[in-house]
Image (cartoon, rainbow, N blue to C red):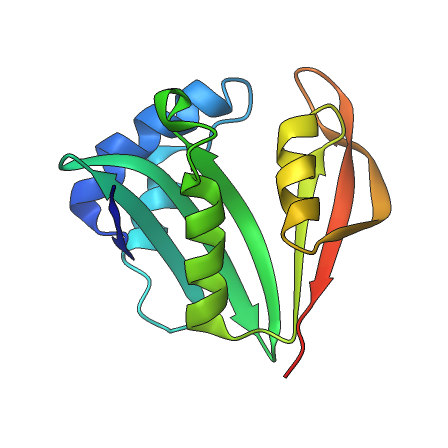
Length: 147
């Protein structure tokens, strides 16, 4: 259906379109994605899912000392429930080979929480008032990988 590759500066407009559709109140600014696309340290990984020549989804995270922190995963609304987020997470895991992974998700985002649980993440904490517009707690989730 699509391909997954490293995010480049040419992908930023497509990434921003998805970001604004998915996170209207707390969308990251262009500069944040430009920094991610230009990251060459090997610590931060940003990937895009390309379908029909367009960005259909993206993921970004960093892996330090075997701990992967997933910053953001988003999929174009027209491609949801088609395995795009699952594929992006799987590719990031394959590339980074973490011992553990962490992420935060809005308490009300039951679809994302269900996906993460199906991938082996479990809820281990809460960050009160983490999100705004609307104010909401974040559920922290963790996954441990076997050798």
